[in-house]
Amino acid sequence: MGPTFKPFSAGSDELLLSGWLLSALEFGQLRMNAQDYLDIAARARLLLDECAVATLLRLRRDGPRALREIVENALFERRVFDRPTHDPERLRAVEVYDALVQRLTTP
Picture 1 (cartoon, rainbow, N blue to C red):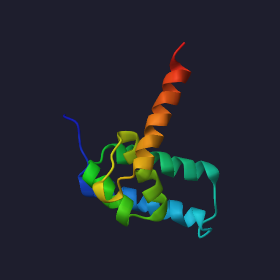
Picture 2: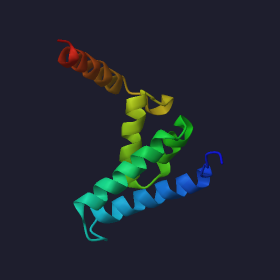
Picture 3: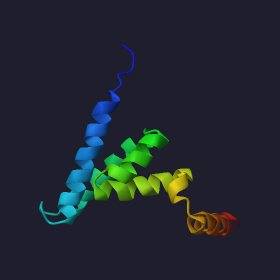
Picture 4: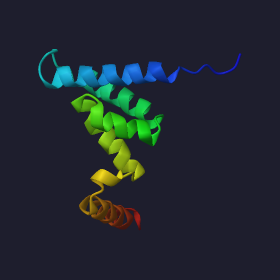
């Protein structure tokens, strides 16, 4: 039996649910449990790794607030800047980060 794949809609539903749950935890609508929050955020991050850049850009714009912040990090790690929000300061921050990591990892 070959591998089974979830349709994208299942992953996107799970992403949206994750974002809504994280937001509800942040705003006190649900009782906060740090481990639950971490688990939900980690699962959302794994799902985001499977998404195309176009999907990430849309989620950053239209997704739940807590999910938008995770998406922004995913885009930053991929070094993706969409033209309307391209920011030379963010690009400079990436260069500074790379230089710092290079210095820290070089013996």
